[in-house]
Image (cartoon, rainbow over all chains, first blue to last red; front, side, top):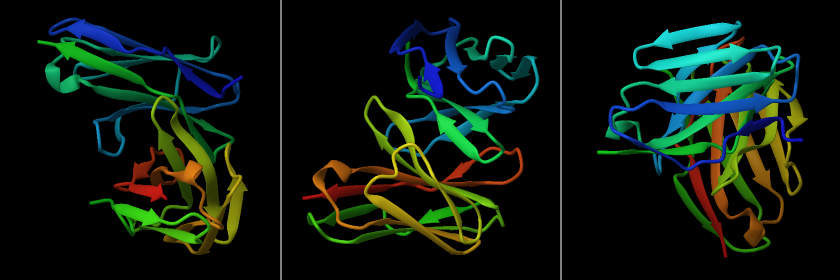
Amino acid sequence: QKEVEQNSGPLSVPEGAIASLNCTYSDRGSQSFFWYRQYSGKSPELIMSIYSNGDKEDGRFTAQLNKASQYVSLLIRDSQPSDSATYLCAVLHNDYKLSFGAGTTVTVRA
Amino acid sequence: DVKVTQSSRYLVKRTGEKVFLECVQDMDHENMFWYRQDPGLGLRLIYFSYDVKMKEKGDIPEGYSVSREKKERFSLILESASTNQTSMYLCASRSGQSEAFFGQGTRLTVV
């Protein structure tokens, strides 16, 4: 079982719609969770971090964490063409090891 | 501004060569990482280090080694480069519970 799994995508949404990205993780003791965005040819950049159960909102982005279900998600509201990128879920295990999912590629259609 | 700097953006090496990829961070972070990224596979962890001279194998350490002699520098070594090590290599650093910051990446081609 992979440590971090994401819905495979690619995901295509019309401009203005909500994009929903999902991620599950295997280590129940994981404490810190991150969503990164990566444009083609660029390095990943942080969008959101979340550490406790529930929702965390930052502008058009909302991260949701459910530790009992070992599930973390990212919602992008009012999707814009500039949101077209690969989104990577990352989970911190044992305070040191940071593991990533394979990523979900999102395309926002104008 | 936080900074993680990788020594080369593009590198072409021959099969069997010993290859060094260098990474330097200026944020006094304890933890440093080396990942490789291949299409469809996301970021796969090769090695990480949580302190000077300390290292841990990641998920795909075979064919690689690392060195961390100083806190700010983490080197990835390909002992004998092979064509299946052609990839994008990303270095990252972090501290505490914070996010990781990435270097600009090194695209390595082994011919």
